[in-house]
Image (cartoon, rainbow, N blue to C red):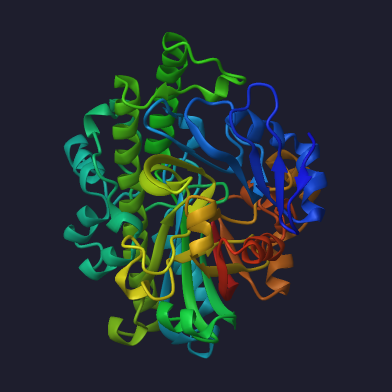
Length: 478
């Protein structure tokens, strides 16, 4: 598909056929050729055909092929005539990243890293179908989690009230409808709070390797050679089941409401319809489960550091920098053609990047902008950025969510067959523990784009600004 170059990192996919808006693609010149090969630009064009889409179908530099929407896709819909699509949210509802800072330097933990990684792997179950024996809820308790999110976990003793201030939406998406979540989904989530899962999910002990913006880093509580921890997981089997349940509902709804789809995976329902309302309620409930999940993992991480290092909490000073979603649809107010409008913003493998002084940017960061967390692969690095006014004006306050895959899981596994992945990473100074070798093969660093290249695009575009670079020291995987 033909792209028109707008500047060094912006490309326009012109309107053609039934597209209602153009596509806006953020990419370096080197990235564009691979985008053409993957055919994910066709998905950008497909999204642009959906009713009620506003301004553009947007794709971030970590974009790759997804279910219906590309992963790395952003689209906003006017409630008057627009739609909600599960394919624009994803299977793992509110998959997201939480960054924890500590008061510790690398020198204070370096000789205990093997023990720290082993204990973290033991205390946070990982892998397909992973579950906890010590946190197993009745269906009524799961419904409480779906209603209250991270606050449920804090009140149950898994964390501190001050954690909630630095979580997107305070750790609770409003208007959840636990009654719209199936018994099957409830059963799948009953023993999965506080678990990592598999695939690209991880827990990572890191060091702050470089500071790019001293003022923002200070506001975020980050300093050179500091120890941090990133947790990447979502709503687990519960969220997957919610998506699966509602895809069937939306296929029928699209047919019932006469919505013509270029791809069945874009099945959707008009905003305001009964089908849309039930999905939004179930999606919010699943998102709240994900917030609670990451809150329990935060508690387990704190406990792990205290046990292994033999230090009290006051010396470790493990605090939440931020927790951000990257598979969500949210109602937000944005300006379109100079008019403030309430829109339903889909972010599929994209993350929020709200600017300084925005009321939803946590008070502690109001001067510098919302922390933006962009993880890379387990062998290179991750980045902390800050949200900008440019992002709010151009991309509905959105930016990329990670490095983005460049190899399928099967292709990565084939290319890594026979390689000693754990030893290769150990040679780089990275200790890795995994539930199985298969995940390590699928998650080799080469399976991903270089996150530095991706981050340089969004920084260059001004839709997030670089604050700090984090380098892995220890990683747990599913």
